[in-house]
Length: 126
Image (cartoon, rainbow, N blue to C red; front, side):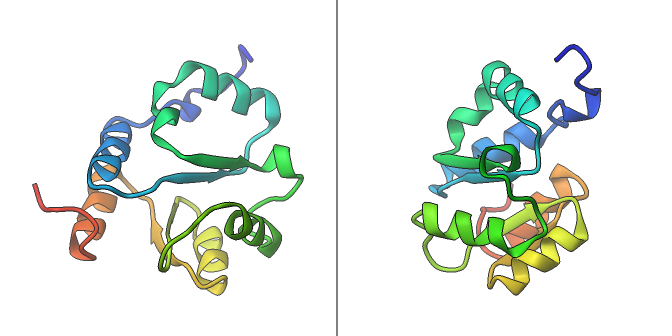
């Protein structure tokens, strides 16, 4: 656990975006490729996980993005309404989500994602 790299820490602005989405009434879920020890540590040390109704770590289901089975598992487990918006920093994961019928937003920065969600009508402009 001591070896968890710094890039697994939340980026400034990302937690604020999670809170803004929750405050806007959106149901939040996470889908992450993460080894079990890292996932357990992150859940135990980051309060923002409470904003998510549910989530899937790849280690828990033995499935991994971008393979289609993890998206099918998520779809089966979560009461998704309409077409979900999948946010990820890896383009082939976005492509896989879109093949599954989901919308995709490529994460480059919290401000960029916020602007895209405002443009799509999911958040009010600030």
